[in-house]
Image (cartoon, rainbow, N blue to C red):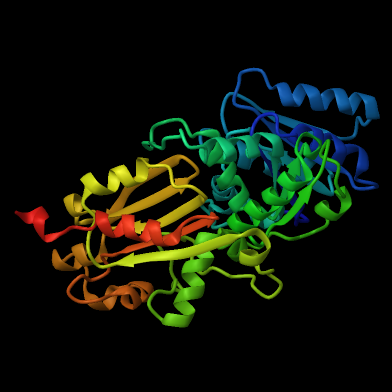
Length: 411
C-alpha cells in the first residue's frame, strides 16, 4: 500500500513580463513567516532569468532549505504541462514544504495551467488531489495597462482580427489573466495618478467582480493573507469572468438560457458556474460600468460583421459570446473582443446542425441546449455580452442590427 501524502496548497502567480511577479515571489520568500515554501519558476526562454533572480534572493536569505524547480524552454500552459505535473508531484513528495508557489511565464494563461492540475491520470487521480490550488494571483503593470487602455480608445486606433495561430497581444493576455484571478495586484501605482488608479480598479471590477483588487507599489501586499486565503474554488473561478456572469444572471430571470448543472457548455466546459453577487457594489454608479447582452435569431452577414469587429468602439472593454454567421451557418462562432483585439473562431457545429443531420436525438440534448432552443432556428443565435465604461449601447445595438442578414442580401 502506498504511503499517504499530505496535500500541499499551491499559489499560482501570473502576469505579463515586467509586471512584478518575481518581486512578489521574493517578498513571499522573505515575508511568509514560519511557512516553508517550495518554488517552481517557469520561463519560455532557454535561460530562466526569473529563476536566476530568485536564486539571488535565496542566497541573501541564506535559505538553503527552500527547494526550487526551474522549467525553461516552454510555457507551462501549453508545451510543458507534463513537466509541470511531474515537478509539482515531486515537490509535494520531497520538499517538506508547507506551500508551493508557481511563478508562471509572462505569456501563460492560468485557466490552461489548471488543466494540468485537474487532468486525471490512468488511475483517475490528478495533481490537485495532492496539491490543491490556494489562489490564482495576477500581477498587472498598472502603468502599462492604463497606457494600453488609453491607446485603444484614442480616435486613430483601429482594431485587428487575430487568428488562432497568431501571437496573443499583450492587452488581451492581461484581460484573460484578470478574468480568472482570485487576487489582482495592480502594481506600480506610483507611476499613475490617483484618478487613473480608481479607473483601473473599475476596469478590473468590470472584468472580474469576484477578484480582490489591490493597488500597490513594488508588489507590496499582505503576503500571509494571500498564502492563507484558500480563495480558489473551481466553480467560482471558472464562472468569474463578468461576461459569463451576465449570461447566467439574465438566464435566471428570463429562463432563456442557463448553463447545465450536470454537463459542460461551449462557454464553460467544466460545468456549472457560480456568481458572487451578494457584496458586489453598484459598478454602474461607482465606475460608469455598463453591460448588455445582444441577442438575435437572424444570422450575421460576414461582410458586414467583419467591419464591425475591426472598428474601434469607444469605451468597449470586453465582449464575448456566440455568433451565427450566414456563410458558415452550420457552425458556432465564438466571438471575443478585448480592447482592440478581436477573434471570431468557429468551434464546432450547432446542436441544431447535428440534429438535422441525424447525428443526435432530441433526448440527447444537454439541458442548456433545450433552454436555448427556439423553432425553427434550434440553438442557432447571436448571444454576445458587451462590457464597457462609457460605451454607447444604443449605437452598438444599431450597428449590430445592421450586420444581420437582410432581404436584399438574397437578391
